[in-house]
Length: 175
Image 1 (tube, rainbow, N blue to C red):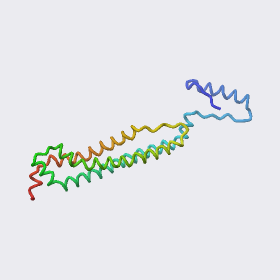
Image 2: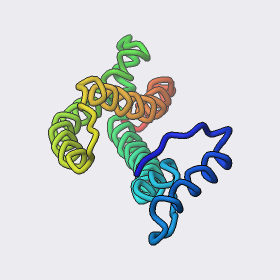
Image 3: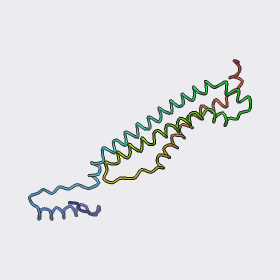
Image 4: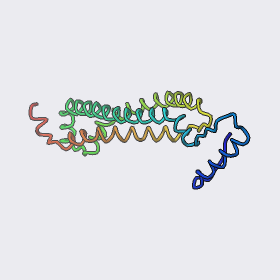
């Protein structure tokens, strides 16, 4: 049986319900549980999984940023002479940053195009287990893609700007 009571008068309401229960059903013990406690039990595992997934997602983002930083460093180092020649010929810092970041932007876009259907499928399957469901909105996937692109651009831009503002004479001196 479910009974809605005022939270401020819970103790008096429980004693009243217990007296009515004992009068009408003395053979059965009076046991009660608050709905919010019941929900904590039912969705406790989901809360734990959510916390673990959040920590693992943050760790994955940090590791991927380190990898992306390493790839950007390698790419900038490999193209140091090209960047020096472009600077001598009048390329701006913005042009060089765009040149070095273009490849990584393409990779992040391809990753998003692959990840969106997979994420939609996994989330829709996971949400089927709940009695009350929410609809997946397309803007959540766009927001995730924009966030991933921003993180990638910040990570790559640091190394690209460093390569773009370097003295071209040092990079071309060995030629």
